[in-house]
Length: 462
Ligand code: GDP
Ligand code: GDP
Image (cartoon, rainbow, N blue to C red):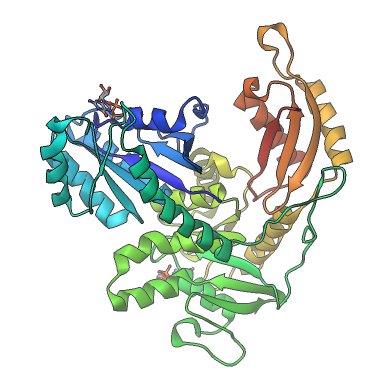
């Protein structure tokens, strides 16, 4: 498990230059799919022995009016929320500008870890700017020259300990996804058809904006108003999660609502509200994104749903407060349309309407959660996959760049939780993303796999 680094800062400080240096030629294909991550550039970075994902808010224009400044802010906030670490760049030659202060402010409020870097720091003309940047209150700046490749060792030494920390935390929190290969090189997962038991309950997180109804929902599932009044006999509960029997289904629910209420007392609301959803997603096997029917698909909802997909969790979208909707049919159509448009990466995830208050729809929610979990654990045999692949190729052959057709030779499922498939392929680098999407969508439909991210890797045979 590696981490995600966002390079942020105002236009012209050198973000793209640094991005290119870190990513080199391994630049990710630009994703032309409409969706939440559209205007962020992403690539796989290397620095020493570190491997991580780097995102860049590339293409920002100097903000000349309010709307542009708003856009810039939004894009930055999104990058910040997606990132484990933010690398904040200033231009040491220009010194600290008012726009830098705006960015520093966003970072102080939202980011989990910030590393300040004074770029263009080659030569002594930058000294004044470097010293000035101490005043941002973000610690000691790393002196960088993205253009000349200076300061990369120092950047490494800042990232290294954080990377270690993430690794440890991920190992402690993430559900198991160990892969064992048999003699044929196929993955064998002893947990592939695992059923949740009271000893190993299904891990569920209910996430959503404040007031979406998370506490009400969890209380309703518990059957009594116990959540906010502390542990009772028969319910094991620690600071962050509680275990219960959901009509025969052993689940452990990650309690973000409870955390928030606790955090309010400690006056750390802001800090927690960013990271609690994140921690919940890391903890969970199934993420229930709870929306308020009156204000569905707000930015915060989209962010957390996107994060759940990126982290490979099974996802169920629940629309709450359905009891106060009077145009239910029309509303449902609108919701489905918005869902498809705003969260194309979650295509096929179930959308369930519920009322946490009256309890209506909770049986369907339970069924959707159980099904999503099953699919997330599903294993498709290699024989089935290769029959299927042959049919897909016949229906729609891969392209032939330069007159030589790309050959897809063999396919297997390498991993479950979520399902990972590997296709052995000639020239995987030349296969367009659209072809991968064709295969993913086909898998989803033909093997009935809603509500789970599907990963597909193209490998060259060597
Ligand atoms: P972005 O808008 O933040 O992505 O900035 P760019 O990466 O496009 O860089 C803006 C300008 O600064 C370009 O002309 C770069 O060549 C220049 N630049 C980037 N890094 C350095 C550096 O380390 N030293 C100097 N002197 N110029 C740099
Ligand atoms: P949380 O912040 O997500 O934990 O939200 P709460 O569970 O505290 O609920 C916020 C408000 O929405 C409370 O006033 C609840 O009574 C109300 N609420 C929650 N679920 C429903 C529902 O299904 N229908 C209606 N009408 N109100 C609800």
